[in-house]
Amino acid sequence: MPGTASRSKRSWWIIGVGAALIALAVVLLTTYLVIRMGLFNVAADTPHSESVFWFLKSVRDQSIAVRAKDIVVPSDLADTQRISRGAGQYVEMCAECHLGPGMKRTEVSRGLYPRATELRRGTGYTPAEDFWVVKHGITATGMSAWGVTHNDESLWDTVAFLRKLPELTPDQYQALVKSAPMTHGETQEMQMPKQ
Ligand code: HEC
Image (cartoon, helix red, strand yellow):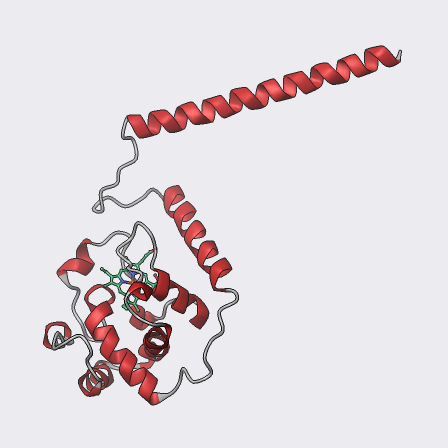
């Protein structure tokens, strides 16, 4: 009977919608309770669980990849002037957290969570992704959006240096930093590699 078939289809539909609404209510209630009861620990001295870490890392990497996709990378990243200017910026703005060859960990870098990668081991990103990260920063970490205060050209200088950094010995790093133009005043002494 056609009437019975359409009636049973309708009741399955109602059951499906009902189940979805109940599931949604459970998810909302759980989220509300997790927030209200302060179950998520935001302390920087307590590492995330593996699943939270995996979730945040996946969100971050995918977010960066999608947004960096159309960035056009300058062809002169290997230019020595660029690298030299980038070295000056790195020591002034980045080394305190990301350290450099031959540098001991700083007070800031020891307490940061998520930890700032030691960029002398490479970033794990493409130049376009590096640029995006340096320009826009990463929310809810210590990573600043340097594009708020620096133009794209100077940020590409920093990226040019980041690509060079993994090849540098402590001596080469120190020599490059010493000869680099400093633009933020003489903070150089403070963050020079300690040997
Ligand atoms: C106050 C500390 C701090 C300073 C200063 C800082 N960063 Fe970061 N940076 C971080 C942290 C923390 C992360 C890791 C964020 C994460 O894990 O999601 C990060 C991530 C990055 C990444 C992504 C690569 C990776 O492996 O995590 C790059 C590239 C980077 N920073 C470059 C720079 C550059 C270039 C500068 C200077 C212009 C700089 N950072 C200054 C804290 C800092």
